[in-house]
Amino acid sequence: MNHQDHVALLRPGIPGPGGVWADLGAGSGAFTIALADLVGPTATTYAVDRDRAALDRLRAGWRSLAAPPRLETVVADVARPLALPPVDGAVMANVLHFFRDHVAVLRRVHDILRPGAPLLLVEYNVDDGNVWVPHPLAYATFAREAATAGFVDITWLTTRPSRFLREIYSARALRVVTEGYRSDGDRMI
Picture 1 (tube, one colour):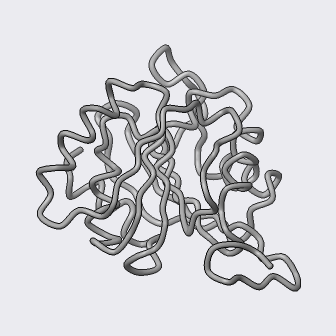
Picture 2 (cartoon, rainbow, N blue to C red):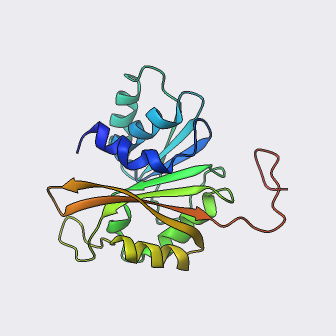
């Protein structure tokens, strides 16, 4: 896959430019850079990964972008509570398949999203893993597990062929909007 594929997988789930986004399990940033193309220079992006060296490579690549959004890198494990502000959207690209308990990780992601905000998932469309992709989840499995984690409006977005496991898909799931929710732009009131 190349940069255009990464952008194409995310594009249908991006509501518009700007906002505060998190790329959870960002690695060296292939999808973080695709996200930057879609949310534009007014956005803020938190790139979260437990591998500090990968985040260093991401920062080096970020400097080469023409008009990059603000980037904050966070060394953290996405399976643990994350010290992030509420975000307007999150991306998890080829990350969830590393965790056996998908629902627990999805609940943690749900907790950092503002009500109504999207989680964009990119994953292999299979349920049988291997040594490199130990716990993949096909779209139907993701839809079921995301609903269990509290997400709503779970939607298939698009696919791209994969040499590795035939097909990779993107999907969107929204954090439920709680009744009576109001925001002053930075926090729930």
